[in-house]
Length: 236
Image (cartoon, rainbow, N blue to C red; front, top):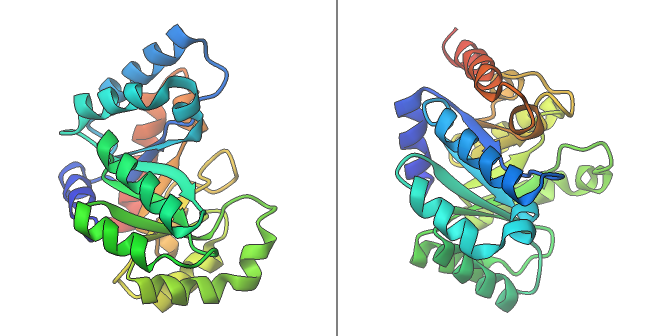
């Protein structure tokens, strides 16, 4: 699939910003009100929405299915369930990810056995994004196998990889190894210490931001600042 839909939205909006809707600590009513506010307020600035286990556990698949159906013409949706199981389980989950309406799924790569998953994803029209380096300080084991994960990502021909924005040296290395064939997604902006635009300057294609925007009293202001920083990094 090669992220065609995401790139189309990115070019239309002149944005590389993806929002992580990992919202924790809200009441049911507050949760839904906040999600609706974000989706309606940020539509001109955000090209993608990442939804993970917190929303799936809190609201369930039917809520997510309806949310995606409502906004599918405005955002690219990424399922961040970090698939890391045996092949037949991963493939079963991928079918359900597709049924909910997602455009892409994030998977770990270290467990191996992913040829079938990538083949299935291509058949049913879901992009695959593999994790090669996470953004938090404790992700030390990724350092030991980083090069191997990059080579595996190339072998599988995944559509994208995740490299934390807090680790620009690894973004530079990933871009060198992957060339322009595989997109780089970088989380960890603001709350974990990376500055907006920093990952783009290092070679990433998309920056993922969660708490700094979703928990803000003025998410539009923060999103505008991020997109302006990204545009400066991209276009000068």
